[in-house]
Image (cartoon, rainbow, N blue to C red; front, side):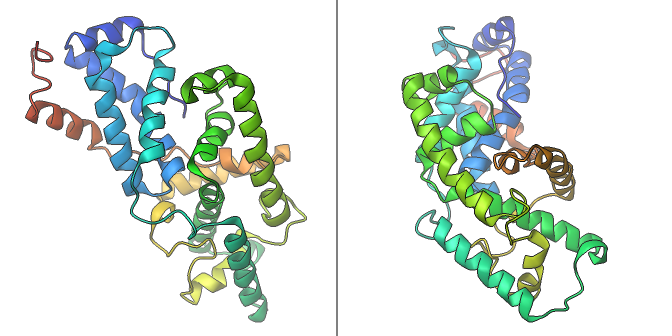
Length: 294
C-alpha cells in the first residue's frame, strides 16, 4: 500500500508529455495516495477529493522534480501539504476523541448486556453480522486515528502503515529524524495505551468486542465510534471487509496494538479518478496529446 517510485525513464518521459508514461505514474502512485488520504481524513469522499488534488499537483509539477530525494518522498511531501490542510465534510474535533469513544463503546456494551441472552456470539453470527462487525472494526480503529491531531496522525501513519524510516519521514515532514522519532513515540504511546485498554482486537483482556456492539446498531442507535451508519469508512466494499478480516487474523497474532492499524484493507480508489484527472488537464489546456504546453 506504499507509494512507490516509478523508473526514472518513466518520470522523465511523463515530464516531457508522454501520456503513456503519465498514466503509468498515476497507476503506480494512485493506490498509495488514496489510502493515505482515506486514513488521514476518514471519509471516502474527502479522501477522493484530496487524492485527486494530490495527483493533479504531481503531474502538473513533474518538471520541478530534481531527483534530490526519492520520487516517492517527493509525492509524500505533496500529499502532506494536502492532507494536513484539507477541508472535510465533518468536524474532526471535538466530535471524535478517545474519551468520547470510550464512553460510546461502553454504552454499546451496556446495551448489549441488557439484552442477554442476545444469541450473537461465536458461530451464531450470520454472514451479515460478520460483515457488520468488520465494519465496526474498521470504523472504530479509524476513529482512534481521528482522535489525534492531523500532524501526529500523519507521523503515526508514515511509520506504522507505510513503513517509512525516520530519515524518510523526516524528509517528508521537514524535521530531523530525531524530532520525528520523538513525535512518533508520543502518538504511539497514546494510541497503543488506549487500544490495549479498550479494544478486544488489540488485547484479549479488553472487554470490547466488535460483535458485542451489534445490538446497539440493530436498535438504530448512533455507532459507538461516533459516526452515523453509512458514513465514512462504514461504506466499505465487501471485498475490503473480507481482506480486513484476513489481515486481522494474521496480524493480531503478533500481539501488537499497532497491528490493528495495519490490518485495514487496501481501500479501492474510484475507477474514474485517472480519467477525471486527464479531463481536467485537457480542459485547462495543461495537457494535450502532444504533451504539456510549452
